[in-house]
Image (tube, rainbow, N blue to C red; front, side, top):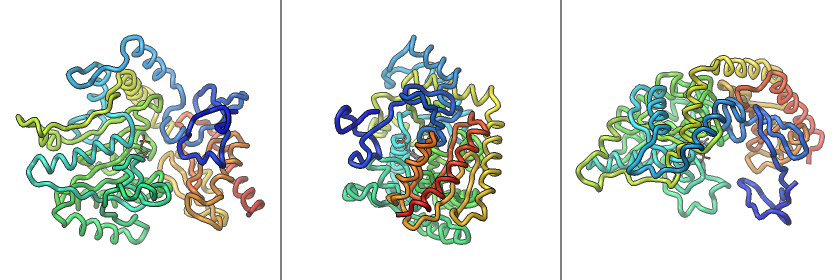
Length: 426
Ligand SMILES: *Cc1c(COP(=O)(O)O)cnc(C)c1O
């Protein structure tokens, strides 16, 4: 056990150190488990913040990392290229929506979205008809940089930085029955000649509370944005790589976005990497004899060869292993297990999309800072299950190798946690 008051100088993410000062050390990862310093196997029911898809340390991804690291370390990605990046780019274009033509690498989901926004504004700027307004969805989340916070839901997470955030146009979340309100708002924003892009998380809004909306709404988003020449940016950082049941959420309706953001599961969760894919039109708008039209963006670790090799290995796993069957198996267990809560007054809004399952605990206090969250986490920790509720929203997003027994154990823990919260109500 590490104590950040005494033995460690580390400042952890999303952690209030006054209230949570001690951290267990994880000494090894394996499949769907984190193994801690006491030798306990903790079920990673949220895929270590949604990155691990096939399971921790998938053998062929681990082997690809080992091999690549014997050949390469970081290589400057201006002036030079390398085979892992080339092979990965070809592979991404092959599996992406048919209009995706170019791949820009970066190193996190946030930067992939920053790149997408810069591509969108650069596109209009370079064509001599500048547009600068970004349309986003209520409850959206796109990262924690200043730009992506600007595009995300405003609240306790970014209140301190609000003076630095740029203004966006926000369409309401398409609640069942009021989808038209969302579409009307979108149309109104798009009608303004300054609407550069609609930035959305397709089908599932992750950090905003695992809020789900139907695919036909997405089709309408595409129709409206296309009509007004507003670019559609699909942030599939979370929804990509099988989470919603299909490889990409966009695949469920053959939606063709103009820009696609990928990260998290791109390496199977083994190493940090991101890619922003775009159409030929967007790339071509930056193609010029005039150097001022260059796409001015880079991170030091752009296209790290070892991370690219891990991602190439991930593509092979998708090609060679029964990943779709594993996803179907997880989906089926979610369906069966969620059914037991369907007429349970302790829970509301039971929902599922592919391998993501979520339900709201009907607690007195709501919202992310609801004290219910930390108490639930402590309960789950005692059960050796890693679940981090978003306020009163409890969700499961396991790696696809999770066993039926383990996933059922996570559901039992949720069942008991609800009783525990009730019993120990403040
Ligand atoms: C996690 C996430 C991001 C940010 O990714 P990071 O790698 O944490 O920067 C962006 N968009 C969505 C939809 C996400 O879920």
